[in-house]
Image 1: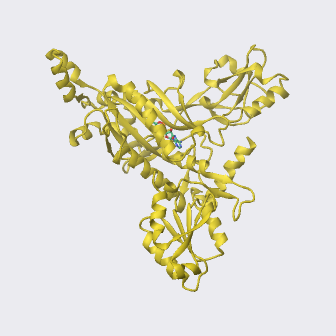
Image 2: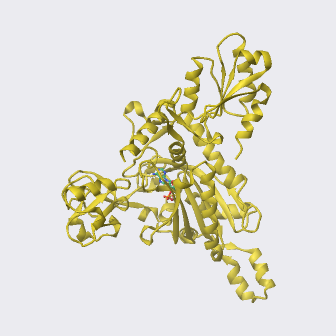
Image 3: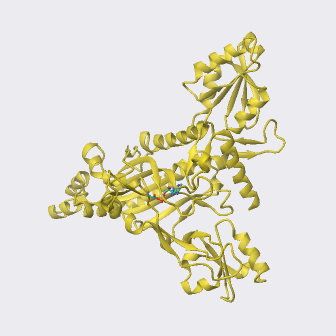
Length: 515
Ligand code: GAP
């Protein structure tokens, strides 16, 4: 655990030092749960964003029939008519169950708290947060003088209130200090127009999904898509999280990459399985190690109000290890959202399935049945992930510390495609005709790859800086370049160097940038 939290501290420190992520409004002391993405952070974030858009919208997966599936993109307003959030269930129900510890004054999300309960029901139970089970085990050995194997690990949510009196909270030594869970609404309120009253109250969206449902009819009426099809969106979402924590993992302003897949209710289960496979493949394509990813089905008690079934793609974060934490949710939302918006808006949001109508006609189904079956409210399968959480995963995945490594012990082994800077271009010394050749190469390549031209400092320091920010290749122009038109290319992870022809640099990098 100590080691994992050290790793996180080192990643946060590198991010600040090298311009990936800064605390928001830092000069005023910051604002808890808000972060700014620096010059390298925005490049990394945009690379992941573009990869998602390319793989989901521009070149979507091949469907079970061997053809690319239908997908369109959208970009909807952050502030929608507040009735949206009443219909979606967010005004009434978008809340986290919170428990307070009266003694330590800590506040926890009740569904995050785990408890070690004695199997024989004798004595106290010990609560802990994900990744901190060791601390609860220590208390069991020291205070209860028992063996942790005598205890079951359960979620606090599964325990009855009359058991709370026996629970020792994560930050206390005596039992009975936790309050009962209370709901806390997570939406940020704002006002539209000059007057601030209940009538002008509006909300910053807590998810991008609802903007898609509101435009279901617009998309069907104005494009050539037919069910099944998807609508994808990337954008900011806002949640007044009670306990923003773990760097950018849980923040109050973040970006989501969401897709709503509209399909026939009879096919929903099949598409749910399809998207599980596709989305796992997408995370692998970012270079995330197989052993760091897993799928976890939601228990019945965990399901959101709209969900029939949900599976999370989870990642082994340093701060959750040895446990995993959420990265993306894939939910079977049934017809919940379109039905709700249809009822609340009074607008018809059903779908007339012409292809199904023809098929049923061919099968000799009665006219009455055809009419009833061809018009329906589609079901929705929703893969919903966090873009900013993906940035964190790439950083955790790429972070390396190799004591004794030349130049810098710390470096980021980011897959070349996603590296903020692909290529460092250096003259060995800032004279003798080398800067001119290096700058010419930089000017030739900068439109194809994000390059950095740097003529200053010792070559070792320049390599070290590039390693720290995850630049996969560095090109050095030296005395020999002027004689034989070759350059040194240095690879980040292995630090291996080789000579290649100056005019082959472009193809060398391009080849290594492919999927
Ligand atoms: N439309 C469904 C929905 O929003 P969610 O599980 O609440 O589902 C989807 O959010 C994803 O958005 C999560 O898996 C996570 O990656 C990201 N996310 C949610 N809350 C977040 C927060 N406070 N900070 C950063 N990312 C968050």
